[in-house]
Length: 286
Length: 325
Image (cartoon, rainbow over all chains, first blue to last red; front, side, top):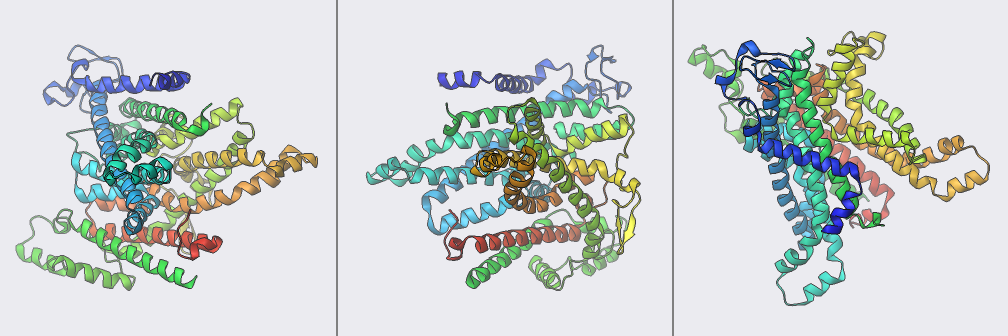
């Protein structure tokens, strides 16, 4: 673990990215305590403060560092609350997709035969079908809300985990230590959980990092198209969508700042994922 | 080989059938379309007549069988909202999307491949690092956000290009095209660039990886020994060797470009099929949703089938019922 961190530290860009991710997560977690207002308490909102540029001092007496939106909401507060929802959705979808995908992938590799064929055919079919279209349809069918959204994101993404887990598990399956474990009178599931699964984890963690970022991006896209969460739970995508109509008249901050927050988060997660992949990849080891 | 082809055809047909059933049943579950169709103050009689007219009073499986029967005759139903055949509707919007997708694929190829080859040829130069950073951004930043930034930069701040819509088109063979006039091209530029960024990033990565590999090969060593210039080596040998995987991926990616056009078309109000599906989802226009999805599923099943059969043609091991290694 220590040596892992020491290797990670050599890439300063990855260190900065990790710091950014941690900072964003902390800010999102602490949002109720560090934001000047609760952006969704209507009593706090004053339409006289609506669409004010960054730096405006509102009727509540504090500075709106990032300006306000069309309802007079402080954008900084709205962004932190939006990040909370985006992160919740991304992590929930990523975790469920990883659990489901890893189970299916390892099951396919372990069971072999017809089960393997059936699972992997469905997975391959889904991988060839664009995730965004699948999520779009599911959200349209299941309706708005957090649970339907997570279901849509998981359905769109589990296949990547299943492919990865399957690839890793088939590679492990042929190794001698698994043969040896199988020769002992241990039950099959013990071999899977104690021997195969731990060795499939590194690639799954890498895919998981990247897929959390993808889930956040996908959720933002769906919300931007008006198909994500209901307006009572605005994620970053919806904040961006709300500001879109004011962009033409030069009030760019309403869209731009939530977007910057989204991009910084996604790119930072991707950089961390890239670094993890390089470190887990034995071929690149010096 | 014939057995393999038949087996794959049957598989494709089963997948198509399953997809159509899933889409039909899934879409059936949304809301009550009759509320969209008639005004809320219509009398009970009108309401029931409308329900009967659209066949919404029948059990689900009967509606599906009727749908399937019409589907096999090439009839995808009529739009509830626009009251015209879905097939005509989709076909009238398809040229706009095809034009957009083709333009973005061309941008991806003609900009991405040279950049990627350069990045592979000089992997350590500053410019190559910048190109690779660009490709990371193209991969990870959501399309809709890049679209917004493009509009903000080129339409709002600089005022060079229109922010949306399709603008004037020229009729050729009964279909309107944008790329034939200078003004049309201006309208096409931003959406095409937006849609191309993902392909661009992928082309850069693929051609970079390919070039790095080929540069180490004997082909290049011999070409250098023969005294060819570096430019000639890149153009005549490297480019040719890396082109095969690029073309394969490109064919596969064309389908997903059509799907990703949904986002780009919404941002730029481009009147293609992607905008059609979003509009039909928001207005609960059930036949259009089902028809579009069945067409897309058909497109993907066909692409997969063609790819599988092509691979089988190229790889004799697959024909004997074995699996790909």
